[in-house]
Image (tube, rainbow, N blue to C red):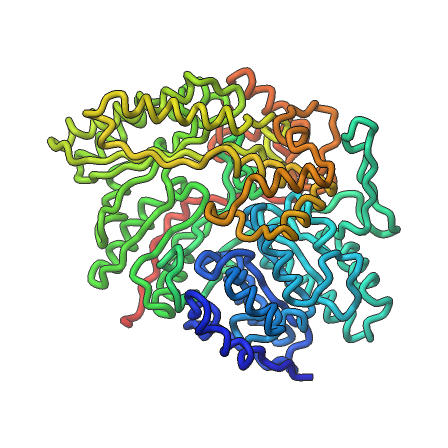
Length: 636
């Protein structure tokens, strides 16, 4: 049966809200398919505002992959701001997709991509607006199957009450497998109802269904065990890994936003995974092994994307893009190709030890020199050994000296505060480094008109990393160190006036730490925060630390037990039954190496260190160089 659009009811509300354009849809390259012609209907959600969610690569990729199937349909939905939420409740308008404005409640599946745990309350808003019961246990076969994905899904236990399933790892093939299971169940007449469908998904071994696992606890509150409660359900659920990314050149036709978004460019992922081994970095650990796209495929994706969108900037994305084995040739040939079109290239933050001026010049050749970003992460060399970020202060000074000497006038340095074993002295060395950067820059450039921005985030221990056992620093400690750092930077005003400092205080990090390493008992806190008005917790103007602390107290959850407590090696962690491929003993050994300030090399260029990913997952590192060049393109 056709599903009616909610737009007639929604349209009357839009003049009353801010930025109504974000709700109307119709972007270049958006797809609207015939509802009745598709057997399986997906609503894909990024649980944040349109301006943040639309550029998200993961959602755009799945949107295209699913819509290329004749038997499937995918539409997008984003979090609505509180002004529209209030009007939707007043007028009885449900959560809608921005493509055809169909009600989310009508879809077979609601796939939610969590880049951060602070989006959990926004999921509850979307479910409630949709008329879908908040708790998975209260849903039947008339409700969408709610599937969590993204990096935060590697520990979905805090939202186990609210999601029906979770998928770990790469989604391109996983959504196809899920679509096949749902299609076949529907064709068979929906036997066994919702429970049977979820059992079929769980039996694949690649979909985690929390209701099919029982959790028991020890008297001291730690987890005793997590075990399946149904036959045919695997003891551990494995992540998905797409090999040969050249076979998956998505997105082919990127979406062009109607409203201003956080990234006004098209992006191409040039490789996936990272084996640099930064011990704090969940993204690097859970996306192993490294799999490069060839220079030919990257060139073809850039050409297709520019033709489809008209963007004037291309971002070459990965966790460490300058590590691509062909990045030099890629940058030069792309800059040559688009020199007349004035299409500029950009990289995310660059490792100091992978940066060179020739590469930077290629990336700035067709565009403006907006600044360079480096991420030393730790303030002192001792601390950088702990976190396995093998960058010396001398390396950094040499690099920024060369950059300032070649005409750059702004450098941004990213650090974390609250890292394991960190002291006040480690943090204060950031001020010394920033002062030395300004001195070196002035000497190299011959001018005092240069800038260095120090950006600092709070460290949050993440699952599936060597620091998953570490204690967090409490907010008071973080805030005290940041205050001392600011004073140290400004102690010499002749240098400090050229240094900007941006930071997040310790309170949001503590909440993120609660959610990132929490278990199922934390779900009650999330729900209590949401019922008390919690929305958009990733936005400082909407975040309320007191709301979270009050909710935790009311639900009997000890926040510090989950955050500032160091775990023992034999403790069962909430995510141990979810297999990222990493061997738990290897992670523990690397944690001990961190405490001993022992560095680990990158297995791309050294022998294997037996982290477990390739052997456990049946995968392997895929890197070049291929020795090939960009394919020629036809005139536009």
